[in-house]
Amino acid sequence: MVFLFRDRSVVNILLVLLLSVGVHLHISEQALPPAIIAGQQNGLFSYFLAQYIYNLPIAIQVILFHALLVTQALRLNMVMQDLRMFSSVNYVPAMTYVLLSGLLMESNAVTETLVSNSLTLWIFIKLSRLYNNPEPKTLLFNIGIIAGISILLFHPTAILIVVVLFALAVVRPFRIAEWLVLMLGVLLPYYFLVVLLYLNNQFALVSAYLPKISFGSPLHGLDKLYLINLGFVLFATLVGLYQLQLHVGRLVIQIRKNWGVMMVLLFTLILSPFLFSIFGTQVLLMGLVPLSATISNGYSNPKKLILPNLLFWTALGLIIINNWHLVKI
Image 1 (cartoon, rainbow, N blue to C red):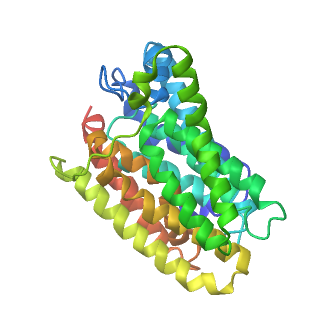
Image 2 (tube, helix red, strand yellow):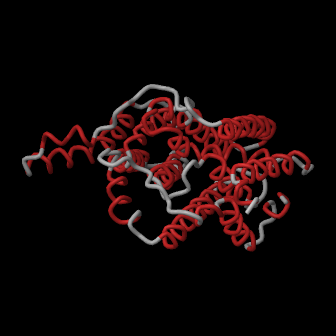
């Protein structure tokens, strides 16, 4: 099955859509649960989803969910190919993104974490342009603004500040002026927010727009099937890292830098569920972009298809087991 996605045919766009429908087939059987807790402020995305998305008919929510998921998967695929991070043009990253969504999502709804992945991918695209950029300060200022706005939209994306700082250290030599420009961009959205609240005599509400860190383990209370899913994702990630290590030495410096940024994204975002444990395992979806890029090496790089097919059918088998009640109908 993997060989279909290792082809560069545009037909694979349809296959990615069909895979998304198959993996998340069960979302049409019942009302989609809201991703937020009533009265809890997680950022502006929470307000938007509660007011404009969760009140829509289920059929429209299903269409929006698949449209968002497939668009993100194809966008990630296009970025990986444009940056030449794989030796061949294929649709493996898009396939991996959809498969992982089926393994990591507890509620198949348009959630803040899923929407925020578009911002994560956007920041990665910007960071990939830093190497040898003739005007890095302008680019860094834009990256900072995107990161600052992301925090206002969904508070756990505050961890992206750590990502951009480490990525800057990986991609460019240390220059204090560039770091200051980046931080200025991060703080600018909050500057306008504070001014707006002050002028409207609502300055006391500033704390509602600040991220609140809650240390803890998101694994507590999870069912065994979900833990098995996480175990497989960990194994597939190790396979992807091993395959990347085998091929990274053949890549040019700029591509190695891009993979370095992706690794910073991976090892930082997988910590987010432990820093924002109040949000539960759904924060794991913030790592969907770097996890998909990394695991794609296990599907794309081996010349023989034994290992890629084993990973694919294992993932698909786990998804079927998770939704076994549908098979028995």
